[in-house]
Length: 343
Figure 1 (cartoon, one colour):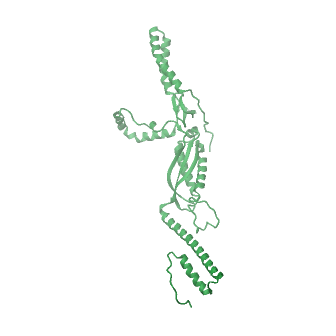
Figure 2 (figure 1 turned 30 degrees about the vertical axis):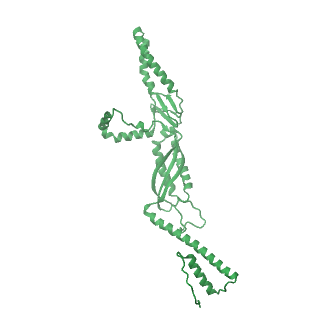
Figure 3 (figure 1 turned 135 degrees about the vertical axis):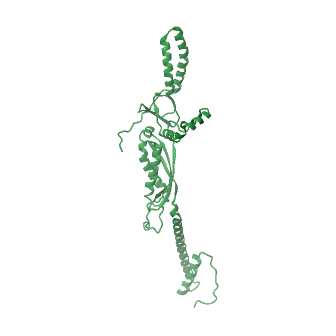
């Protein structure tokens, strides 16, 4: 990636806006009697100074900017980077310096395009409300927020490592670390983060299977393979690291990525559910049979040790058959009294 056009952050330390505001007000008040005294006394120097103050004071008031906590103000002057204010307060800056916030500008452009065909209606509406309209600045500030934010791009359909369509969604906890890079290195850092998040989720999810079944040919005994369902925490960490590398160029820091939704796509969800149920039934039956065989063996060994009854091979086979039916059956056994003999 080309880094020759990177702009290094320049921190501004402008004077206090409160003091300058008080000074401007005092100068504006004193200029009125000064102008009158200059006219009556014929002192055109004082008159000229008062007129000059009246011309410059509006520019001074225009240069007053406020910055809230955990926010930064990125300024440009005549097309060039001027500096960044990253501390809260009320300051005086160059009145010709222009703020830069891609989110503010994008929202203003969207509103302008949406209302372009209804200028007359908007004008009539503003007149009816006394000229007070709801503008973009009421919703999005001109400063860059440095607060922690959460990005939720919803869910998307991807193919896992086995080619199965999977629905996956994740949320990203992030914040702006370098507002200068966020403004100048990318067009719109919020959209940039959203697109990179989708790309990272898709690229990472296709490297792992949703789940591994015992009958899979690739799931050998003792093989420990990560899956989207069983290793979601580890995979989320890999998503975070990959996404952090992609957006570091934009001055963004990724603190956490968490998978919030994971399921098979609708077209294969029913089939996969049946497969999971079949695997669970087989595993349960295997455990039941193993336990039943152990219990039968223990019963026969106990009978032989205590010489309770002398069983030949045919009677042992009959006894084993009866015990296995009782222990492995789905329903309660119905006892039958046999008064005869098996011979």
